[in-house]
Image (cartoon, rainbow over all chains, first blue to last red; front, side):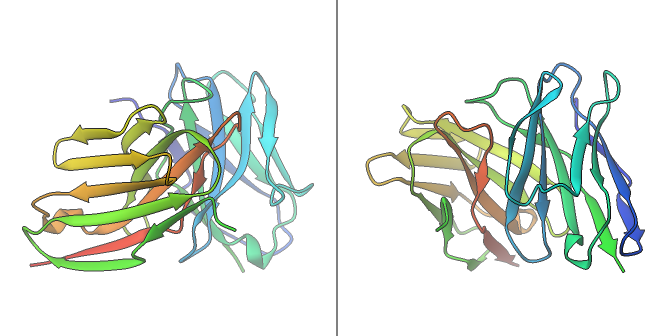
Length: 114
Length: 111
């Protein structure tokens, strides 16, 4: 069964460093998303991406964040200068349609900023 | 204020019993989805119910949606130890390009 894959599963980084989280969405999906979940808290929307551009972003997704689809398969989230409060699980998701369809999530990348 | 809020926050039941979790939301929606998350793991899609549907079944899962009350329920029948997880409702607000998760219900099935 097709699935969304994320790498790495766990990333530890020094505060102020840049990190890139990688995702390979399901191949025929057109809509891509990043969500995060701070430990013990709810899953929060960060950004959605379609047709090579951001279609919506939350207030969490500030100038420190960027997304890119560098080729036909990868979808990346970059955090330019990490802060301690960026420590969280980051989930990538993809879907075939924009509305009225399920989003398939990856297993997540646990980011720890020290 | 939260778009999706589940209750209870935590639920412990004996194996074999039925588990019911509820979700309330605030704005009009295209659909409502339920996801499961095992501890520290990814989100697994369970079921999607559209705004024009009232009830949907999938195996041991039964989901209801009442758009007049802006609420949904997830029923897991004949619970098993493997059902121990957090369960989230997620709504797809009209014309919004995202889904919004509630805080989840932590379900613990006792042997």
